[in-house]
Length: 361
Picture 1 (tube, rainbow, N blue to C red):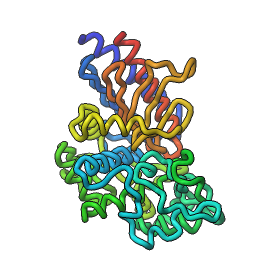
Picture 2: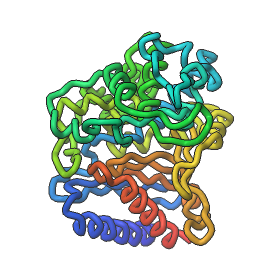
Picture 3: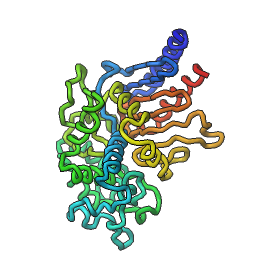
Picture 4: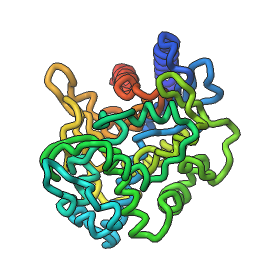
């Protein structure tokens, strides 16, 4: 077993260092590979700006899995239902002209489940091209001191974006939808979203170095926040990052994320039935990736994606990832901290899984 551990450690570390060194746009990157079954526990940092393997970093859209877990908790407590119309929870000013498509207002038909699995047909204020003017990524870089509240962001999206189809009529990834889930969580609890995260997840799991952006963690990390890049510009301390909310504003470490994912996989937060629904009620994200309630399922595609790579979790556009790989009973966690690197992060995660598979077969 010791020889296996050393062999896997060396192989994965060399692979990860090489991947990072070959890409000058990756300034800092992190990788955690953990399998209790095989006695593997690897924690790595790479890149010229990386300080320590346990540096806190923005986990980007991996945050959506946390939001989905909170909603799952409320469903189990009878505080809401996946089938509930979102109009029950949203203020009139938010609902006004929220989902107009081809001249028809479909706002009243949006269900909570539609927001969770991106089937509401709503725009995505991050990735969609605006009807006119500059995109959100452009504004974030060009107006670094601009503050965005969640409400202002949704109003901007309503004024500048088009919607894509009636609720339930397809799949379109939507950060706008996850902003709405943040509002729903606050309406159900009467608390700010970040406080619900802390009470329901961070504190129970002793995730001491995890927090919502611009709020304190339970315990200060000894390491500075890893730098985050957008179009290769350091945006870590820009006020414009206030645009992040229930779909992308969590800061965490690979240690803390391991605690969260282990608890989720083992049913510590939610029942098996709820987890099953979160994983099975899916829309088609990409070929080989279905998207459930905050959960990405990487699944078999003949020839292209063998069953041995099947895993589930979530990933972000910054190259962040948090997955459980059943074939090796392994957790794969990390980030590349560069916007636009979502697919590259997933590839690196799957390549690490491949190395673990070869070593443990």
